[in-house]
Length: 226
Image (cartoon, rainbow, N blue to C red):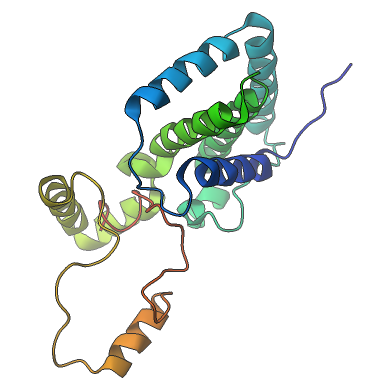
């Protein structure tokens, strides 16, 4: 019997959102117990490695990859995924295939975890860990596979990479290795409060310091490829 096709991106987005909420609550940078996470990863990994279960998901991923290679895949990023907002991701077949392959693989990992017989808490932790790994492996995190970063590099003569390295070193030395989400420098005293509010609104921020974007910063935007 043919296995039904599923909506890759919608399931992945929903799974990641539920996992983050279940494990971390409102703040994704709360302290987690590395030992518990590693134990969970081990248990889920052993369960997921069962030949029948793993083979089924490898077969499903292989089918989608074949469709991508043939140009028949319907995999696309969800509307809020700004990593792939550059037109190159849809206009150039090579980049489009790379994007679709990444999204399909990330989605299948989440589907695999969903089929592993563990309790809800361990499944949420496993989804969280899988999200961290798959986000880190996104093609937008590499200069050679990030068309927007490549364009910016040519436009600035490489100055953006120099700023990105300074940002990274600063975060490593002064922010525990985590990317800063706000500019820690003091505001210019010459600006009025209204000016600051207008500037914040223009950047998508509310007047209360929150942002309209995701809580976890996207490492491929802003900080490193500044």
